[in-house]
Image 1 (cartoon, rainbow, N blue to C red):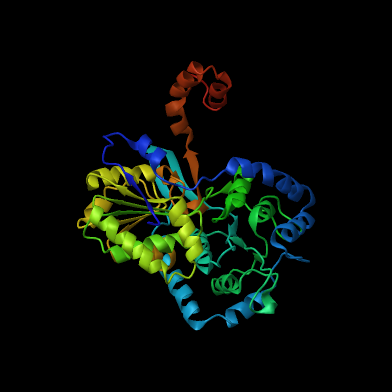
Image 2 (image 1 turned 90 degrees about the vertical axis):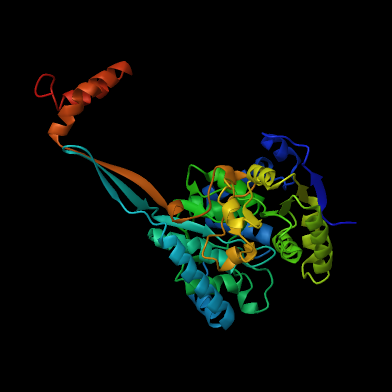
Length: 444
C-alpha cells in the first residue's frame, strides 16, 4: 500500500482556492487549546520569576536547575569540542546569511514635502531581543545562525538565546544545558547570553524577565504548539515574529522532474516532525507512480523511518492537476512554508508564485540547501500564513520611525488645511494646537 495518499483535483474549476484549502492536507495546530494550558504558567512566571521558570523546567524537561544562565565556560567548552567540519559549515552558513541579510538593511531617507517641511524615514533596531532555538527531537545550530545574523545586521544591541536543557547527554558535562552544538554556534557568533530554558517558560522568561534575564522587546524563533501559544499570550507585552507551526514542503513538478530527487525532498521534510506536511502537485501520473516507488525504496535506509512514515501517511499527499497553471493555483492556495518548483520552465514558473515562505527553483536547489547554506533564512511562515507574512529578516528587527521637522513658515502654509480637517472631524483642540502657534490672519 502506498505511503502517501492521492488527491485528484482535475475536476476543480477556476476560482477553487477555498475548495483546495479544504481538501489539501495540513497538520492541525490547535493553539487556542494550548493557550489555556500555558496561560497559568505564564502568569506564574510574571508573578514569581526565576523560581517559576526553574519549577516549570523540572516539570516539563525533567531537569533540576539551580540557575538558568549558561556559564561562559560551557560555551567555550562546546566551541572547543565542536567538530571541525561542523564548525566550518556554521561559519560558511553565517557568511552566506550575512551577505543576504546585509542586502536587506534599509537606509534612512529624508523626504522634502515642501519648502521647510521635512519627514525623515528612520529605521531603528529593536533594543533587546530574545531568540528561541528549539530542542526536542534534534538540535538546531543552524537556527542559531538564522536568528542571530539578521538581528546583528539590524543593529540589535542586546541578544539573548534560550534553548531547552538536556536531561541526558553524550558528554555528562552538558547535562542540564542546551545541546553543545547549539552552544558552540552561539559562541562562534559571539552570543554570550544563553539560557537553558525551553518551551513556553522560555517565552515567559523573555516577556516578563527574571532575576537572571532582563525582559526583551521582541522574541523570535520557531517552536512547538506551546511556544506558539505562549507567543500569542505575551504578544502586546512584547513583539513576536510569528506563531510557527509544524514544518511543510510543497513541490510543483512536471514529468521532467527526477523522482529520486522529489522523493528525497519529501522524506527530508518529514524527518523534522511527525506532524510535518508534504505535498507534491503535478500533472503527471507517471511522476506520481515513480515517486511512490522511490519513497518506498528510500524509506528502507531512512534513519528516522517511523517519524517520516507517520508524517507522510497522516498529512501528506500527491495532488493531481490538469496542467501546471492549475498547479500554480493549488500551491498558491496552500501557501507552503517551503515550495520547490521543478519543471522545464522552473525559473519563469517560480516567478509567478505569489504565496510561499521561500521558493526553491529547479532540481539543484533543494529545501535542505535553504535549511543550511543557501544564504536565505529558514525561519519561515507555516500553516498557510505565507499568504500574508514573510520569513524572518533584518526588517523583523527594525522599526520604522518618522521624524517630522517643519519650520514656522511650513506650518503656516498648511494651517488653513488643518483648520478644515480638524473641523470636519470635530477635533477643535487639534486646530487650536496649531493656531496657538500660527494665529489666524497672521501669515496663512
